[in-house]
Length: 162
Image (cartoon, rainbow, N blue to C red; front, top):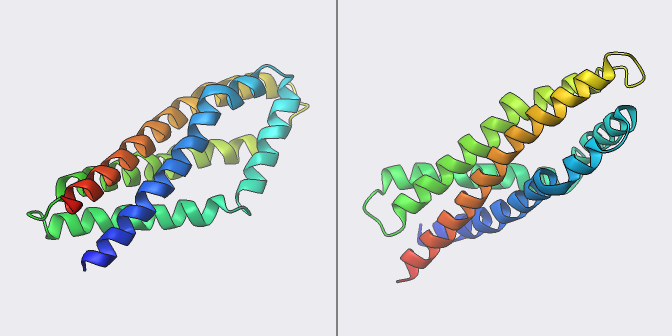
């Protein structure tokens, strides 16, 4: 069981780091850059990103990291007295709730709504401005959740090694 936990912690730490870095880039400069161009171009670019990301290496990292976080939180609950259990629980909960649930409940529906907009129509500019604001707000949460989860998984690795 120790080997399984260690592997899950490494997957969680590295995966959350990768996802957090991607989300950080969107929060810090990608969405700002997309917001600085014409709404029709911004919508087209974001829709293209959303289509491509679903067929990229992002998806296996997204799912594997989420499953690792869920497993680690469950293991921490069952083995609460083992070294690193609290860090595993916090990391797993932060990742699953702050990244996965946020993505499914907020970011994906916003992406789907954006895909349905006529990017050349009159409604496009206000829809785009709301999308930029709301999607980026939720993305900030995903960034923080992944960063916290990665740190907690690293802390759990350190505590288990001590």
